[in-house]
Image (cartoon, rainbow, N blue to C red; front, top):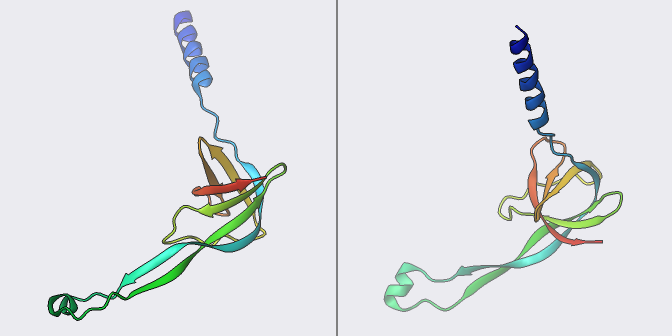
Length: 125
């Protein structure tokens, strides 16, 4: 009886010592959103028929691609961030409180939804 109690106590203390704390997030505010040029999109003027008959010109349509940049302000640091997903970026609500966590070389951002998005840090002040 006594041995069973000691084993149960050791098991409980061991599992409590190995329990992992949930990650802590720092609070920040999305101050403003800007757009900046982040590259060019090119579309060739070549067609299959033009390639066969040799009538295609070397025209290329180029368009400037704009990306979203956000200013994120914590108590001590101000960050300029940009979403990693360039093709389908999510608009973040300006003026809302966000939760951030920097893990290794990337920032994880949680705005109202509980899912964390990975963002690029452009600069910090």
